[in-house]
Image 1 (cartoon, rainbow, N blue to C red):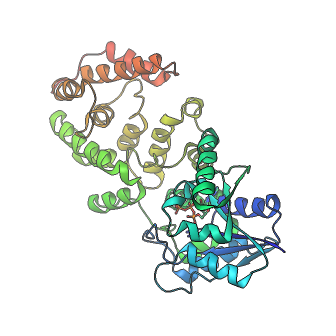
Image 2 (tube, rainbow, N blue to C red):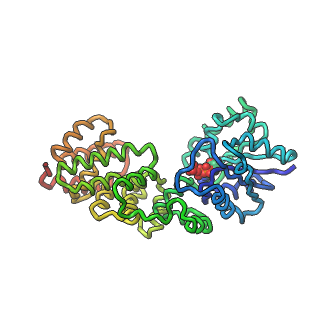
Image 3 (cartoon, helix red, strand yellow):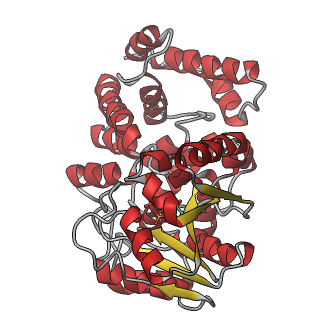
Length: 400
Ligand code: ATP
């Protein structure tokens, strides 16, 4: 009796994280064979625009995994019409390999939703679930994974193996963003990246510089985490209102508002990778405080990828921490981010009103609120925020 791994996925595109899982699965699960099965129409997602055709995706999978010993690429799901269910796939594979033990490989994200999959009990009849950790934080929830494994054992009679793998935190969604931002070559196998360039997939050769406003908005919305879109559009609207109030260029305000969180959805580790891809050293503070890193990489992407001017780039750079000697647009973006209409916290209405009355006073209120909170939480306060407070306290207030 042999041991066969089944590794299915959208692979849109296949990345180093997938390859690491495949290699570790062969080794840790002592597999005789690993079947790579690209999905055609995944039941749980629709493919984003700019995605490759089915055949192109299959080609990328062949490039990514083709050199790994004991792997075999299967077009079993791609040949199937309509929705493609794992339950059908594993049943078919059991028919093909009746004597062998089958392992269904998945990341923790898939495992946590397993009970909601189509006919999970039918899946458990044919395979052992082999679960790979995806993120460092997964290790904190090891207890939850154990609990879920126990539930699957008891309710479905399923077999679950939680694999103690090395983690490579990245997703295809990250790769698609990194492709637009000029950093995907760092997280893709070289041949996959080259083919993506040849086929011009995921906007890799797209020129994002100088986009008209409506097109800029469309692109930004497609690159953000969907949950963040209302905030970003709210920040843009508030920035434009404040720019009108204080006589600042409305276009710059709108563009900076739209782009201020452009890299926020990219995990901090990959934001560092993005800086390396652009040969830009990351600041020490940003390393220690991953939550502010997106202001740094957002400014980088705004300038290098979207071709934005100095004023817009500066405003994005300082939108999280502030900095010394801020110009009016910088202050507007800092405050717009704080008080846009979707924000809801104690004191927001007062701060919003102050933003239109006296921008510098509003800045000081916002900065002090943030610094106080960081101190309360025992976190590091950025020197940039302290510089912002110092210069504002020593200057004449900007009023309308
Ligand atoms: P997307 O971002 O488009 O959702 P993805 O990176 O999750 O894509 P899929 O093709 O959907 O990639 O994933 C196929 C399988 O590989 C899933 O079971 C998923 O959990 C797992 N997987 C993907 N990336 C990793 C990773 N970095 N570490 C461990 N497992 C992973």
